[in-house]
Length: 309
Image (cartoon, rainbow, N blue to C red; front, top):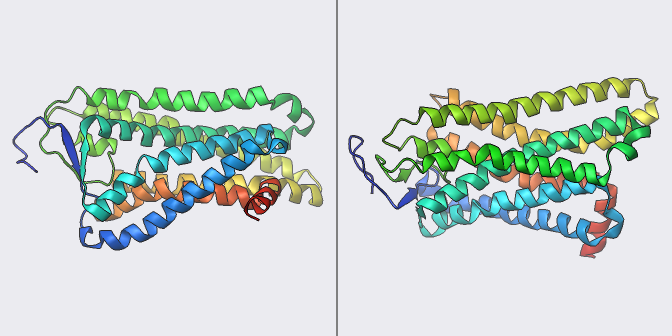
């Protein structure tokens, strides 16, 4: 139950609204959400299963695909089941500790995925700019260490956010105007000063999204310069190895940057639009990643065709 803003109370659970302002459309909204969620789970599980079971695909490049698949499965399965229970059964309640756990997995998964894309950009840079040294540089151990670094960085960056929220014991309301436990949506309900949490969240966002984006763009500028020095046939072949990665990067960064900009500067944007954008970056990358890499990678495409036939 919502309480007056000038009162502070201690709550053992929160209430997630879903899509504020569109409660009457929750049933209809749940149809595309459930379809995308189911497709994302099936697609990522299929990619991971095929790569793990097919020994011919046990190569350094495919380790990144496995990591992406696992991260996308964690991201969707920690948010969509709860959201669908809100849409279908109006089960809005979520425990305080469960809320913090969901918050951690959502933000950590996005941070880890950004690190994986950065590592994949470096992999493409070495493959095209230094092809003769690729096998010696991008060994399986190097790929595994790169993936572990992306995972550890995500965990270390995001772990302070829910831990700092535990110091808040009193809240003006337990109603979260969001579809999942987003960090700032919870901070704004606290009676204590949450400016440090806000600044920390902005700093983490800058270190992850902005710096990773700059490094990825830099790597592709160098790749483009290397492509211009190749023959037309070699250029086309090299470009084909990069296009799937570029598409996946755009599918990941475009919705998350749009959501962040609307959240920070879109004062006139309806609140339900912001919430829908926040859900887009939870659904679209997990859906499109297996499609992009499955369609663009010949070896995976052939194994998928054999698997389903």
